[in-house]
Length: 99
Image 1: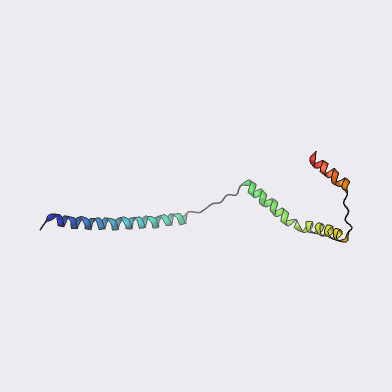
Image 2 (image 1 turned 180 degrees about the vertical axis):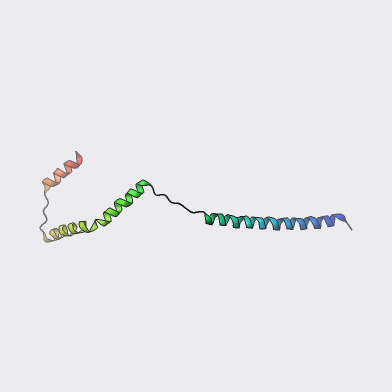
């Protein structure tokens, strides 16, 4: 009987045992890591600029009813043919925008 064969058998058995232990340990590590992740909480911070934009958007949508009445009035005036355009007023407003 050769001792090397017994040594090979023992070293392969040891290798299998170590592989099983290391795979079990890495599975346990993964499970522990998953538990750690699930206990942490995410946090979102909205910038001041985005908060201001949200406020402006809300004001614009809340004031929509008032503007709808004005638009409806102008639309009906145009449809009836009674809407007049004043070139002088348009020119004045254009100049105010430029200057």
